[in-house]
Amino acid sequence: MEKKNIDWASIGFGYMPTDKRYVSLYKDGAWDQGALVDDPNIVLNECACVLQYAQTCFEGLKAYTTEDGRTVCFRPDLNAERMYDTAKRLEMPPFPKDRFVEAVKQVIKANEAWVPPYGSGATLYLRPYMFGSNAVIGVKPADEYQFRILTTPVGPYFKGGVKPITLCVSDFDRAAPHGTGHIKAGLNYAMSLHPIVEAHKAGFDENMYLDAATRTKVEETGGANFLFVTKDNKVVTPKSNSILPSITRRSLMVVAKEYLGLEVEEREVYFDEVKDFAECGLCGTAAVISPVGKIVDHGKEICFPSGMTEMGPTISKLRDTLTGIQMGKIEGPEGWIVEI
Image (tube, rainbow, N blue to C red; front, side, top):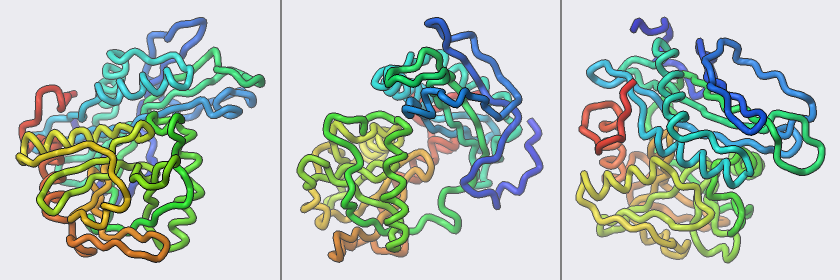
């Protein structure tokens, strides 16, 4: 497959339309068979449920070119499962998991020329999403829906290399204890926009959100899970019913235990103990792991021993191992890598 003539090394993390996108419509109680289409534009009624009541959800995953030239994607079955659970919580008709994975394969295959070459630092980002499409004026779920997958080539999330970032403890709450923090709904991200703009204005890269009930426990940032490393090299991630179950975080915990032989623990993490950790990172699809160098709590600084110049040693090994699996340099667990 001949690749598109793009300067892959210089593209940023933004939207660039590709040749095809996948669309399936839900009407009269059933999903249609779905198809690949050319048009990137969507026409909606002015009273569409998604525009009035934000009935929408999304996923994110990537396709890669491996060292030996294969096109692959990473654990799409988990994205299918998470979107299924999200749809149920939002009273949307879940898109069948097997059809989700098949649609991912179809849209990658149709846009294979847009999958960046190995070693370029770029990948093809996939955004599956679903929304209520018919006109709704009373507060209720829609009757008709669209499931779509768009693709766009993206460069590395961090241009110029991965450098430790600085967080601030937010005065805003990300999610209520019995709310929607555990699903990937658009509304969760809408409410995070003001806090992240405020954080950037104050010179910080991201927010650290604490639990809304007691404001004593670490939850996550606006778009990534936390991962901590203790001074005796144990990998710890926060546990909460209002944290989004990150596929990258779950994969890193397997890598830590099975590949690096580290002890791993998923538990409640109190903010008071953060100062005692040796390393801190944020994990998600876009950057895999972003190292954290410093957390500022209303003027009080927590500085991690790994510092502000480079990624800590354990987080670095975790990142290198997982990206090695994704790029085909390291043999991954069965089912993790799906070849197109």
